[in-house]
Each structure stands twice: as C-alpha cells, then as structure tokens.
Image 1 (cartoon, rainbow over the protein chains, first blue to last red):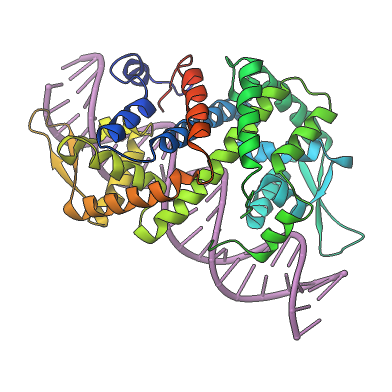
Image 2: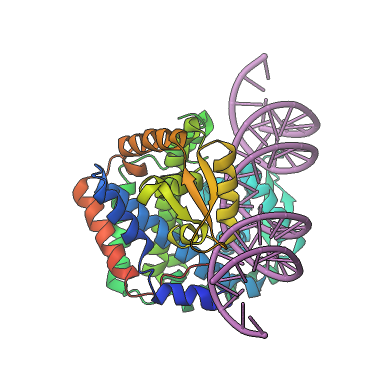
Length: 177
Length: 177
DNA sequence: CTTATATCAGTGCCACTGAAATTT
DNA sequence: CAAATTTCAGTGTCACTGATATAA
C-alpha cells in the first residue's frame, strides 16, 4: 500500500502482465531444455518475493524486520521463551553470526535479553521479555490477518502447495549454512 | 558443496530434521489459526532459499551473482541483446536504482555496454557484449544442469508446482517495487 | 588437544529513499 | 508545466568469511 507508486500500477495493468510468463515465453522461444524446472523456480521465487514484501510491510509498524520477527516468534513459542543462540541458528536456518546480530537488534529494542546457561557456560541464552511477548502476539495476529502474505489463497490451495513442497523437500538434504 | 561444514551435516542428520516441520509443530501446539497458510509460506520461502543458494553456488565460478545472472539472461534472450533499463526494471521486478547498479556491475565485468536510445534520449540502453553472450550461454548450460536449483524434482512435479503457483498469482496483483 | 559456542571486525550485495538532471 | 527515465548519494539489513576467546 505504502510503496505502490502510480507508475507501477500503470505498468502492472498495462503492457506488463506477468514477468514470469514473459521470461518463460522467451526461454521457450530460444528452445531451452529444462523449461518446467525453470518455470517452477521462477514461480516459487517470485511468490516468495511477494510473500516477503507483504509480511515486511505489515511488520514495519511493529518495528520488526522479517528475520527479527522469525526469531522473536521462535522464542515466543519455545519452552519458557528461552533458547540458546546455536539452536536458534539451526531452527531459523541462518548463519551463527546472523543470529548474533539479530539478537543484538531485538535486545536493543527491548524484546529480548541475553543470559548465560548454567549447564554449558559456552552457551548464551536468548530470553523473550514481556514487551517482546506483547509484540510477538501483535505480530502473530497481524500475520494471521494477512494469511502470512497469502491473502486470497484458499485453505485447500495452501494445503496442496505446502504438501507438495514438503514432500519434495523431504527427498533432499535440508542444508544449513 | 563448498560451504557445507561438518557441523551442519551433523546437525542435519541428527536432531534437526526439518526446520519448517518443527515450526509448524510449535504453532499447532499453540493453537494457531492460519496454519495452512503459515505452512505454505514457510515451505515456499524455504524452498526459494534452497534454490537461491544452489544457483548462487553454481554462478560464483562464472563471476555472476543471481541478480546479475538474471539481468544478463534477460538481455541475452532479448531482441538484439538490447533493452532500456526501465524495461529491465519491470521485467526483473526490481527497483530502478537496483538495475542501475546491476548494470554497473555487469559493465565493469565487460558483459554489458551502455548506449543511448535514438528514439527517446532519456533512455539508456544496456547491450550485451560478445563476452557477455559467452558467459550467458555458460550460465544457461550450468542452470540447465542443476535444473535451476531443483535437481531431484521430476518434470511432473515441476509442472504441477509451477502450474499451481502461476494460477494463484494470476488472481493477485503482481506488484512491482 | 580437539571440538563447540558465540562474538567481533570487515566485506559485499541488495533494496530502498530522496534529490537531481535530462528529456518528453 | 507535468511526467518519465536514469543517476547519484546515502542508509539499513542481511549473509558471509576469518579470526578470536571461552569453555566442554
């Protein structure tokens, strides 16, 4: 809503119908081989981009970026609101140094606190604060309202797409950085 | 292949089975509403992430980033290998300033040249060079080999996923920054 | 001694905002 | 004059590498 310029809207309703379809047409015209896979990749990537933008737009008023929201939501739903950073890194599938800086940001906003573990004194524990929980609940409500960036998609469609991708991902290694 | 550390592999084959499934389990345990959409979003986003990493790994030896490759491929398949930057911006669904810097990078690598348009002297035309074409062909071959990051996916699956997402995207505005 | 955890410093890329120059 | 195209300067976030400190 906020960043949608009139130029974009014009282009969108005008000559530019679907960038992915245009790309597919081009590649087909040049007799390319892995067309179905190219089309799947293009569609998945474009949908992910649209989802991400919708979520970021909704999260901005809550003073959260998308990775920050994911980390906060993970803590909010974890036992006691506590997790060691290494575990967060693997759950969020991001690099360890990225978690460090994400937790830095959440800490500076008062959404999270750092503690040390009693059991393993190498570990740093991130613990969600009351303000963090409050924000996480607001964010979860907002995400529910926009259907996680998939407003307009039916429940049946969502289940089908989720099921197909889950099934495929089960056949490949789920690599972590 | 290159960045896969032993620690990641251990985690992957050990306690961490699937980050998306774990997240879904957590959200279900807390009685959340838009679960199917959340699961679809998580799966689409995670798959896009895996695709992106596979492609970037393959493109790195060719001295191309993913956005640079997309811009170069677009030029390579366009008429005469020429396009005005504004058109590239819309086709690639990225911000105009992003195209400027992407073309800067491709130009510094000798893959692209800038020209001015005869018809509208406001426009700047990007034209692919012979070296750019050579690189684009190598990249296209490499992308074909790894099936655009979807190696291991059957053609039927690729068509099904592409079709479902294409159909859904047709019902929503394909917003451009 | 080796491994694991987390941090820090530094790099590069990407996407954006806001302002400007040029041309239509 | 207004609108379109591109550029430039600057900002913020993210993800990574490599090195380091600490503890298991």
